[in-house]
Length: 313
Image (tube, helix red, strand yellow):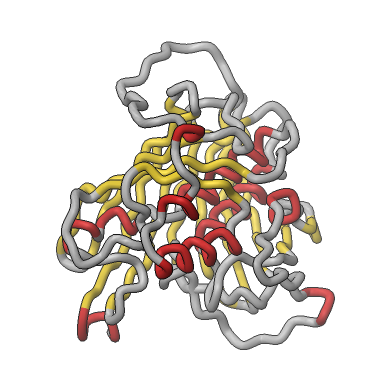
């Protein structure tokens, strides 16, 4: 769910001051520990008091990651997230607390399944199903290969962006998201007016060290997996996120977690591709590698993209 339109319009119910999320300081993104420090108000109920990520609307990746966090807090010890599937129903506001209501679907010997509803001011924003697996030995192989420059060899975004508009775009991203980034090729938020293949790549790393909890690292990956992904469908059409007269919103989002040793505070690379677009929709995929080239996750997302008069519908 993209901040450009996939995060949803809630009902107008006021919260008491204690229910309001903390204010995000201008230019300072929320820290990940705080983002995933959910208040447990019942055995299967959690509340995120903020701060929220976004400008006018809640960033969908935050809702996905916090829903996964809530689900993970209800599974037996020793289980690790192996997949999530989310549907975005409405966009959310950055100014209201979000509640995550977890339903225990299954507790098995090796798998556990949870269903989560994200609710803000009485309006359901997101439905997510998460699966957790107790690690076990098995066959191992991967076909995807990491073949890009190391992050240390790449310029910072501030050094690589060609003009003031691009640097302003990245300052906004940096102020909202607590990650270091390195772009392989043109950054996804600045290329417009010329056509290009539907793909881009980004190295990410959490700016602050994260603890040892595997769930925190899985939630970090889930948060980042939504960032820039739908933008991969736009380069063949000479468009970018924020193009006037364009509506781009995520419809659903899926992540499969492959490597239980993944750490979000070390560099990891997202190879993002817009594999199909038609009929107002686009399908985008991402393969996620750690810096050693291990495939740590696979991501898929379908989005709605409308251009021109259709965007007002």
